[in-house]
Length: 253
Ligand code: PGA
Image (cartoon, rainbow, N blue to C red; front, side, top):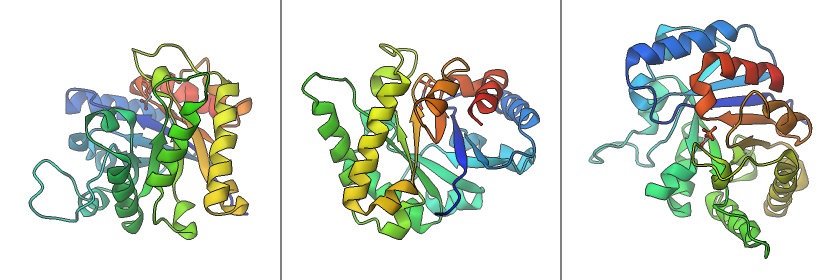
């Protein structure tokens, strides 16, 4: 089986508000992240701040974007294409984040974006997750549908390049109802693996990185990785603090 690196993703969302602040945060993360082995650190700033990777060079940090458009070029006001992202040095892209799904992205759109990213050799960080847990287990069929529709037409060879991020909406952001537990993540991780195994095969399922995201902080990072078996983490708020983000990296690795 191929060696897989752990992956820690910083999703800055629509923050910070100036390039000066963006540089300070990136510099702070960069100072804490040096010569790391067997772990991919992916920083995803907003589009206008993608330039900082060129300005502050650090081979241990990979650049990610928070979205991608599925058309290559032309009359699509406000959109950003895969070639533009590639040109900026982007290696990963977050696709299907619940905050984007809430505005516009259906499973069909998410699927188109994943296909576009893969064809452009940008690795998708494919986000899935339910808005609430119900006792009848409807959340499980919701997740299954997100996976099946999101991965439509993606081949066995291609799917291995995708990182699947389970992000329960109820555990994300400052409006989180509560934190998820490592055992809740374990349950979903096994469930995702089973679906991938049914869609492709068990070998393929074992070669896909499945990570947790939602209110990750320096206190819960280690349990999600150790007890929950997460292959990495997707960090929102705490990725804007170099101190907290580097603590999370140290605990997770
Ligand atoms: P949070 O965000 O860590 O602030 O909950 C995670 C995410 O939405 O990706």
